[in-house]
Length: 310
Image 1 (cartoon, rainbow, N blue to C red):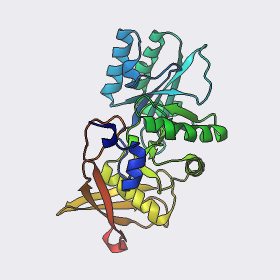
Image 2: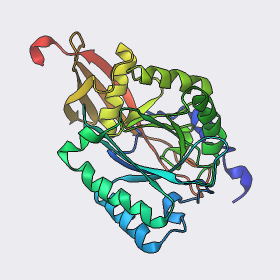
Image 3: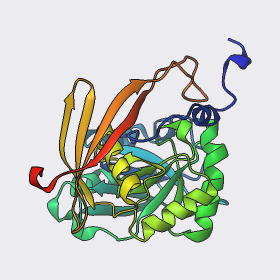
């Protein structure tokens, strides 16, 4: 196949097509973060040259909880000497956001991740949480060039403002939505970021408000629920991460109705109507060798719920 058969960049093509981002956040509530200052392999953690027994134990412990393993690094110049960090993050719900940290200089030190994942399943783990969020910007150029081209300027802009919170990370999914930002342990995904919009979105997030405009979704919800909460935020304006919950999900003749319930006084419950369609076959990543079909979730209606039907 000739080079002219491929789009110049998958993120450019997605914007030209107007690909919708609502409901595209990968599902998950556990993350394993490993600071790695060398070059990142195309397949991230799987491609690292680590002790095979250690690697297997970490992988199996993460898989048991469906945890995502991401490599992380600080933006800009990185010291090669000294211990690196690892972290385990868990989104257990409102008031239960867990961060457990450790350091490693030898491969065997990474076994601390295994025990940390086990501790996350303990109800008392929330008492060990630190309060600072992490802002992860996908900049994994070996996986997809768009992640580097679009992700690194975003990481640079955020690092200037919040160097203590910001890390670059490996592939988080949705290359065509680069630059992608994942906020942990809250599990908030943003896409289609540039430097200016990212600073504005993260500033609002750190002030306790999630913006709907660039939101891909919350990782503790499925695609339809994610799209419905995004519609509620777009209608009513930014809100706290846990200000909305899902009260009901129903489907009739292809029309999904998701009831979004406000948790704070004065917030109106909403019924959000959604339909799913399929895109034409397109190259969805820069590395894709074949065209693929993507699901698109479209918002049909957003209606306040009558108080008598709640």
